[in-house]
Picture 1 (tube, rainbow, N blue to C red):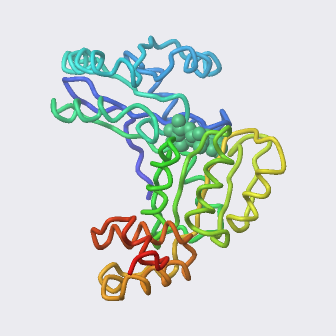
Picture 2 (cartoon, rainbow, N blue to C red):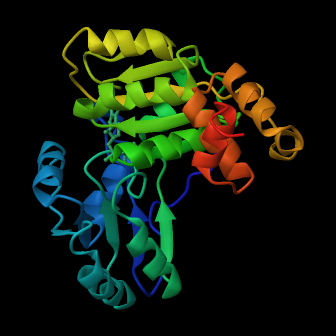
Picture 3 (cartoon, helix red, strand yellow):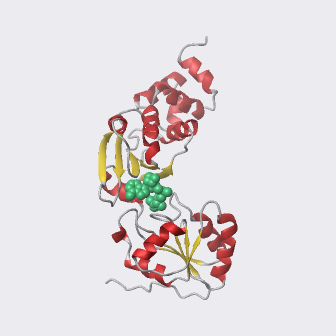
Length: 290
Ligand code: SAM
């Protein structure tokens, strides 16, 4: 039988509630989330102006304070003091789950350190919402969030991830989608299964399913609008590092290329596995050295 649970915890100190907010569709706000936002003493919001629109829509009058990546170092200690003095606080980000590619973790860590009850609410998050309708293997999955922006760092990160057998889940800004898809194809090959989940829960929600090469072509053929989650099928036959290091260097590189890596990415991976100089491996592979 379902048990009715009290929304509010009974503590003498305050509690920290982590409250997810809609990623597009306001109807995804749960009754419990609304009750918490209406009854806490303070809402710590990533952007108070943004959250005010949500509060206005639901006629909630709770006071807000801002907590984001540029002020957390000074703000977190005073919020923990408030919690210790009995203030109930709800933390929200602009959309979805706080702490998931959003501000949040610093307050959670400080509250736990101060023995304050941290109470998470379930609710919307773009990655998991995209995953369940993607058609890709739903678990195990690997949630990565945003990749590094710099090309060199992004390629290095993708090269590491190319071997993983799990479905990979990335966030990306619309103006960077083409760039990231290009790097993805370069590192993982054009045949990887890929899904773009666009504008989830909104009017123009759309799932584009195909290979990495096909979806790069799609992205290159039109202006990119809206928000996207990128989901990539895992590597079905990742080479065990131990096994690969048993092979001669050139064979190990050929094996990775056969699995879909581009030659330079394969060379980089093999050099890394064996802690060899990449240039040296490159020269040996291309027979540039005796
Ligand atoms: N905290 C959020 C969550 O739990 O999903 C993520 C916030 S992160 C700053 C924003 C990124 O999430 C976007 O760049 C996009 O990749 C993804 N995202 C957020 N809302 C989305 C939506 N409605 N449809 C597709 N992707 C979305």
